[in-house]
Image (cartoon, rainbow, N blue to C red; front, side, top):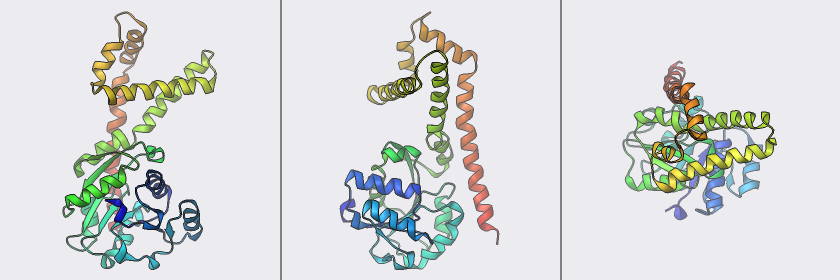
Length: 280
């Protein structure tokens, strides 16, 4: 579907670049069908044009009528201004996709003309290597054809999951913030390995491969993590001793609270942004 479509990034930061890189790397569409613009940083636009060959120029030069999908990738505080700026330049059959944290589909629909198609997405930082777990929330007026178009685009960055708006906060706690939990785990495992005589570079690779292998087992085998854990945990063995220590020191509670606290903060950020934007 993407081969005959034009997409435009409103915002040229790291997330926009990750998405541009993913689309170009996946060879889903040629660079000349990708447009990127920002508020004022001409040097950044020149850089993206040089790196990827995409069209890059100020927003007032953007050929709005030729764009099928607009991707809003600016800071959330600029959402209202950006939406109002394009409101009367777009048509209902053009899709507005937002990667802005905390900005709901309802907020976007409120600031655009009636019937406008909007989609909210939440990727994570692994999009940089095309391994993101990305959530998609479809607005009230989006057609299934356009949901498929958005999904195909986002699959250039990894796996895509269609969820409801009210599930976005818990998704953020699990996947949006999730990579950091594993980095924290790896950080501490690495420290123990180094403290006990292993080379730092080697132990880092050992831990990364171990986590990668465990994740791949879940994806390939299709079994529940609890089942896979049971298969490798022999009574009175080393793994049973290690897992027992995790239970003794409340590892389960720590993991649960990490996800729930991140989800709670996601909800708070939405309310804070709505308050800031609503204030004259």
